[in-house]
Length: 398
Image (cartoon, rainbow, N blue to C red; front, side, top):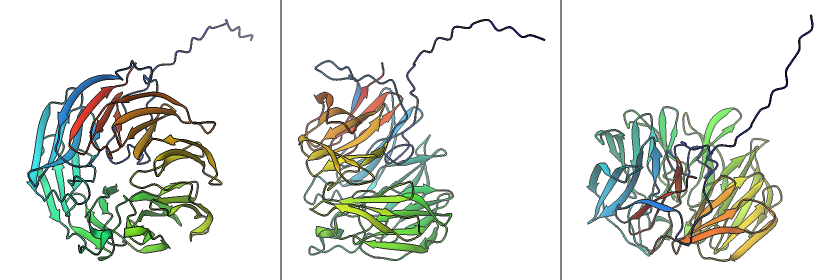
């Protein structure tokens, strides 16, 4: 039997891919990367269209987005507030407040961790250890707990700023980056499951990885990079990592059996091979000295702020591929093969995410004041804020 086939003309149409949530710290995969594509980078001189503006109080918490709702934290009159806003209009849907000192030491103060949304619940932690599980729909308290902050003395800069790391939801538990090796609580009840004890906390957030097929997490404490098992907190290894004032604020990046760590204050960065079970240094340099922000890994390229320059490194070798002019401190995420950069001075910048050369394709001054919080992107809406609590939602859909 002969089968005849008629020619068929197939028209391929590239359509934007939106509708991705940004449910917590550094987005859906906790790596600063959004899967959204087809976004609008061809701005007028006024930048992208402003959907709405709001005021959420002093602080550095980023925005989390789940479905049609956006969540963040701020402080007014020594009171922290968790805000739930309509992501499209900015209308306040609910808020939850509790007493908490502003604590402005060397900067504006206020909460620093970002809410995490999962399975209809919102998890938050304050700089003084107030931890809440809230119903995402109503804002009602499901449970709350108070974890003692690290010791604080004027001589110990590493404990000046309290908790800054955002908690990690890992299966049935929450991992909090406190002490030297973390603490886990039951996400349904807040009951402590294990506690590795007090120590010099850093300011980074935990990242998941596997060691010998065991689910683990890693973060940078005040003195070292530490990896521990999610199930029981057993510490698998530590890498000494000291900075001036023990100010380790950047998360590690884990990819293809390797771990990258970076800090400011002249320390620099390093890549470690994890394939043998224990970290083995691959390279170390001062080509990336992240101070308060995080790097993004994309197609074997590391993008981040080396002090006040945006820089691209080769993941495998640590070699510099390009550097921007000095633009100040800033933070960045990646979407649609572009870096979305929010500079400390409130300039929003779009940069091509390639290793060929630094190329800024759009920029606009969008905020005043200090901007240390990373942008968030969900369903073609870009959320940016400053330390004073001015929050702007921008439309970057085509």
